[in-house]
Image (cartoon, rainbow, N blue to C red):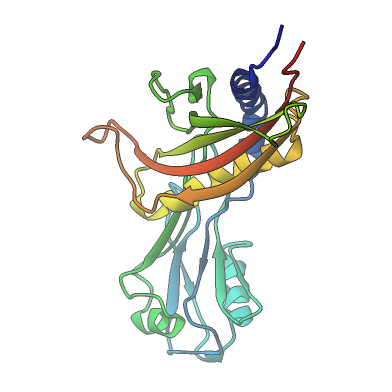
Length: 272
């Protein structure tokens, strides 16, 4: 009796593997997502007499003002003065820009770095920031639960404050026209959704990229999906450049979505 069940073998293996591996991967990726705000312009900068920069580098923290030496100053010199007041907050990159770094987000606290509008206007102009200030927020990505990795999109989905993965449309084809070739290729349209719990419109794409990175990396780490299939590969990714809610109202989180084309190779016997 022939056994040709490639779609179910592929879908079951993919869902089971993602449920097992995504939580640890999400934790690891979140540690790499500290907010980093760079000055648009590169130094040396001409700073005014009596100038200061006001910074906040943690959610809930108060803004701290740092007095800056006037005259022609490099990013490294400005960073040294900032770090004397706010430890490890500033550095300079290879292009001579001032780099401000906050803490990585956690499940309870987003990462924040902010240059306040209370900074001296001439300092903001010299660095390239708007006098109105600049702010960057990074919300922690949450791992999907049992109902966050679904086989089919017409199932109640629970992304919560994290991410969801939906195994959607699929197609199956033999690897070759040789009837004795027992390899089947199952192509999935995989949707990756990321919920932005802080409702930050300006940071959803970074969060979505983090979610797709998690899926991409775990699939690259074991292409056999715990020995369930022969090979798994991601052939294409398309991130949707707009944000949405499932319904109106702030009780529903902002969502970002990306489509991933995933191809799973299943080895099976087609003849008795």
